[in-house]
Image (cartoon, rainbow over all chains, first blue to last red; front, side, top):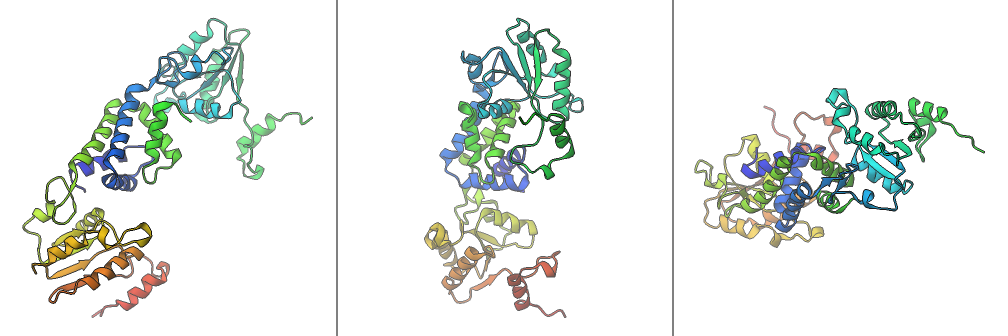
Length: 198
Length: 198
């Protein structure tokens, strides 16, 4: 529809997640008029991110070093391991400042429909980390959806070492939400997981 | 919130129009996991678009040559000139296949609130193009909004050459729309511009 390289740019932008043809066009026209220095900076950071960013050799978190910031931090409790699906889950949990242990990033969740089984995830590496007995609790913090639950169930069945506590994050009503708007599964979980109030 | 270059990428993506912090994060994580070849291609086309794409020396349309495809085309009628705000308006009009004349891209519309006056637009160049009398009709195809109308009004006042026809695009009901949903200004214009049915 457009000429040469402008159409190439629109095509490439349209491949990004959440960017439809109209947005791609809008971004492309913005870039046509933008300062070349700004566009160059975006291009550079794209290349940089693919050359610099690696995965931590211990936990598979995103890092620019061999080991990630959390694995290198001696103040983090090596006895508690939080298993998550993705790097962004690490960031979400870090933001709470509630967790002082370490992580293991699976790289996804079991999803037969997408062809992702246990072998496609960093589960073997998780087992190797647990072998020396340093870790005494594994917190399964996979997403509370079908794939995340399947992954947690699978891991629960695999993690049979004696003296290893395996826990799940609590399910229940989101803080700040309205009870009447909660879906029935969440509300059911909130009942099942009710705590003594005093 | 994120480490080093990943945060840089999220920041750069977040500067694009219509890309909020959540979308920027989502695109960044997609790129982290994407094939390096694909990311490299996006980076290359960004650089390419800023080095290759220029503005036509005659009409200020986007082009990779000195003159744009339309200005170079001898079959396009040099007597009719369509004045638009942006390159994307050229593309929109070309798509209709209704117009066989040439264009003049102003590079925006008069908008005092954004500091854009007649001097920031390619109006002087428009006047120079009209000087030799080749053009017999100027079609003002600016956007039907406040800035576009102001620009058209300004140009109408400037284009006082005798024997020069100055026209505006018709305002009225959009084809395929419902009369009851038309806003009152559009409906008023549709009445004012009514044509003989037979």
